Length: 464
Image (tube, rainbow, N blue to C red; front, side, top):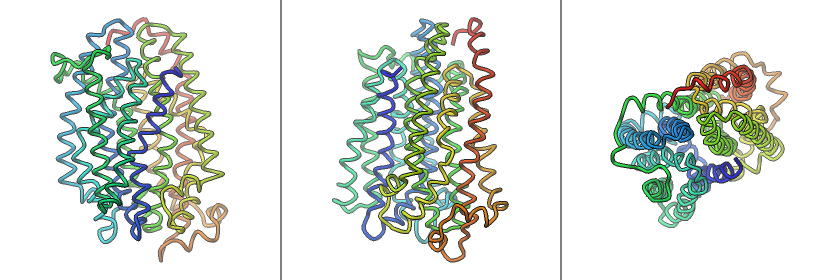
């Protein structure tokens, strides 16, 4: 499991650099860094939607391919992989067209300001959209490399793109004086190179499962179960855009641009927690799925136990860094002293329950690895749709000034724009830890009730 998980964790951490490095450089553009960072930040929901579709196909197809391999049926596994590639290409074309047409209204809906941040958001997303097909191939097909046990090769997919992105970002942003447009160009080029690497490997001799012309296409019997299983990770990522809209709308209303800018930093910081956790689950998933398909219950149980332990330890360590040294993360994204001060305060509130969040991720992703589409979909909806989004709008109406004042230093309220309400801003940020805590408790209880039953019914599991 460590052999599989460690390269995947490294890959997930490096994967953050595609967006994080862009934001770090953009945030330090002379004179306009803060507002440019906010402008690019409001495009984040669109980027999340694009990557969510790659999760719908890849994260749904990879576990089913692994189960087929565990049953000794590599031919079916190759059909699953080939159909997934075709589906990703079709989705990429549709998403590119829609993004180019509706980018402006989307950005405004997601919290952009026509007078300040819109131009920066449009400059970034119009170029990024042209690389959608590369994003789909990299994010959607790279999981099939990990599924076959080549986690180091899958890591190289991300490393290659990230290194290119890191090199090209300062060249295009500062050297060619292209600003946010240069950041987008660097990202597209790096994703294109990574996509070529993925397809070349999956078509080559080293790959156990190969991309074959005979397996390309869209077979409903293959893809409908894949899409059903992938719906959970899709919902988790897609609702991130709805979540960002909800946060940005409320924060823009109660706190103005500085609150929205802080949310951009907070969302990026949360990626530092989510990406390694996703790397752990992607490293464990092939082991869990393969042994589930082979009927080896003991290895499934051991793999989950290790996944749960590692996920909890990591989330606890991340929480400690954010609580006791928030400047370590916030300072990477802006040199605006007011924004940095505000974001440090907000971060401590936002991640208050992250210390136990690894339990949620481990349990939910194991449900996916065990081909439990219905349960995983429900849990994906629970945290964000059922709990978090309603709380973003409910809490500002019930949190009292006295309670908010306990957690709000005197130097924070003056940072808001005229008319800003620090109590309501605090309440919006507080929605995250409350929903996280409730979701973790419910998910852990459901997993405790269902895990043994799923394994005991494995003998009756039909072939994928």
